[in-house]
Length: 140
Image 1: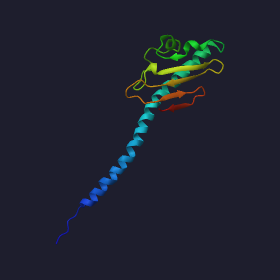
Image 2: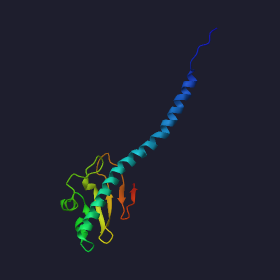
Image 3: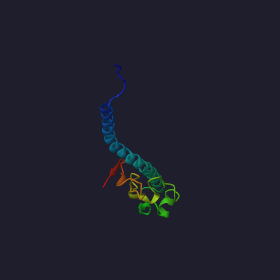
Image 4: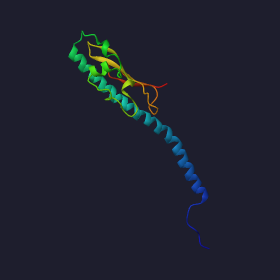
């Protein structure tokens, strides 16, 4: 009697079970990576905003009143003063109006930039670039 070569049904079921377990573990990890990638867009734009504020402070001097550039970047006086156009910071997950500048300090040319996405597919929470340059994300 000849013996057939191949896999049994039980062996195939064990392989399918192992693949299912690996997929169940990998999906939540990948979702976290997607949100991290979305937040990197905000981090890059916040860095550009911070650089523009530092240049503005260098131009005006430490004793200038910087309250005019504090607020959201959809305000035309703010984005014009910093050298941006009305759509320069629009991206895939964040609009220009999603960024807010606060706590501008003329002595050390620092500010705080916060981002909160208004896009349907944007990440949830608030990203903050502190005056010291530290990026942090607070999720709800």
